[in-house]
Length: 181
Image (cartoon, rainbow, N blue to C red; front, side):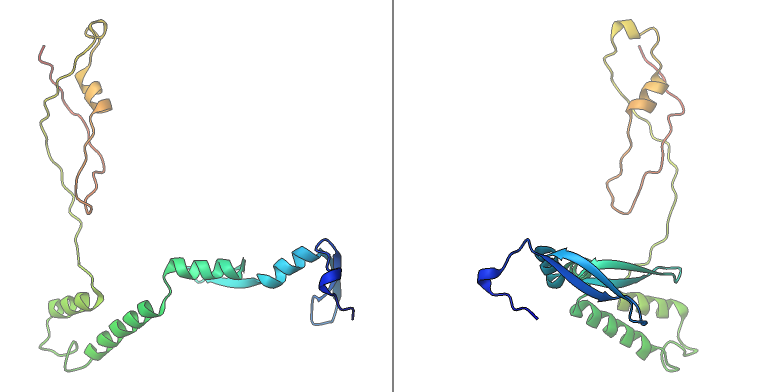
């Protein structure tokens, strides 16, 4: 084996690397530049297995730094895991004959306690339909007055917005529009 000293180091030198590719001992010889080999050794590629909601497993090859960033983004930290373990423990402690399985315990009490443990606010979707009267003043150019259609004008230019983060305006329609010249 040849020892490389700092005086003889060449980052552009070509290095042949022997890689065993299977259990049979088959070898593959790959040629790398010294700088490419340093990058591979400094930041190895890992096989990350993702389990999808349907149970399917997908293998991704990722750099170690990318895996660390992925974990950071998804919030896998010790404090979060400990909090979830505490919640699970509280739920399990209530799954007894004296507590939630008691004949004296009402379903609404169980659900209320469960929501409190999980920090969840139960909600029900309510669909609303409303009639809103709008008065609009528009300075219409004289050459467009003859062909002006208030319904289409309002449909194209009117917007409906709601200032509540839990509510969404799905659609609106202008059914009738009167013009008062």
